Amino acid sequence: MPYRIPLRSIFILLNIFSIAAQDEVLTIDETVKLALENNFQIRTAKNDLKIDEYAVSPGYAGMLPAVQASITDNNRTINLSQVRLDGTVQELDNAVNNNLNYGVALDWTLFDGLRMFANYEQLKENRNLGDAELKQVILTTVGEVMITYYDLVQQQQQLSALDSTILISKQRVELAQNRFTIGKASKLEVLNAQVDLNTDETLMQRQKELYVNTKIQLNRQLARDLETDFTVAPEIFVDESLLLPELQTKVLSENPQLMASQISKRISELELKQIKAARLPTITATTGYIISESESSLGFIVSSNSKGFSYGFGATLNLFDGFTQNRDEKIGKLQIENSEVAIAQQKQDLLTTLGTTYQTYLTNMSLIDLEGNNEAIAKENLDITVEKYRIGIIPPIEFRTAQLNYINAKVRFSNAKFQAKLSEIILKQLAGNLTI
Image (cartoon, rainbow, N blue to C red; front, side):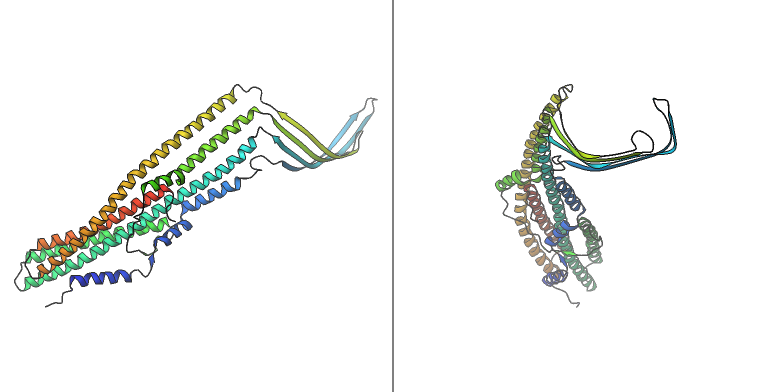
């Protein structure tokens, strides 16, 4: 009689193979680190923030003077003929006329209705906005990476479950063939067992295809070689300590989208200040040091040189511009009002999403306990069914039912943990405190 592997031994072997396959496991911490270092969207958002940081300077806001050095050298060679008042004529061919001017000039806006100070504050708020946008990109990208990672964990568990059911199906084919050989079963029982085995192997091939494609997707998110091979952690652990009141507080204080809207309102307020600055005069100062040299082959002055300082002040005031100033101020106030409305709406939307997601989180946490208990029952039922089938006291259809119940229970249990983890990730994204 051929040697039969007990069902319990099958699970032990699967666990051994699973542990052996974990020599090069990509952990979730390593995955997040790679995403932060390599992901294209994160790298672009970091560069955008650097651009905003470089722009925060008094000079960029128009608070510092502009100093320019200039030089002009004009040369002419001409044929010249001059008739003087006394009637005498002077003529000279190839007469040279040179004019050289060079120096340094300074222009400085001393007062512009405080527009430059509002502009400087706006540059700071633009930097803060870039920081909030970077945080949002990081949260979104890391959340997507984590979801893909735990999806792989779930698929890996399903592959393990399918492995076990294929081994059981192979045992069933062997048992059916032995029973047929000794005349205790019909050929139909053997064929049904083989068909079920083929079905299980087809499901395994489909699951492997999905698993490989998801690994490619994760490699793309990590911006590395798409063919990089790896395995993931064997289990999903869900944070069971999330509380709705704490999450609501964090959403209102740390959510980067809400922070960005609040910063945008502040920018609108500063833009209105810049518009109102046009009601006040603009005062400028200029100064410089100029050196001028000129030479002429013919004329009253053959050569001249001059050098010295120049300085001056200027002021402008807008007296009438067709009421454009009034219209611009009204538009600016409406933009601030729209920003306030947008913030209120965003708060409501975020809290609504938080509330519904938290309810899903609670449901999934309950399903983990339910499906975990159901998997244990299905496994015990399968163990009993296998033994009964070996001694021939139950029909093949009952064996197959127990087998399918077990694999479905494992899949549902794995999916419940994945869905709970998915809810946890979304909740922490909304609260702006996804562990990174």
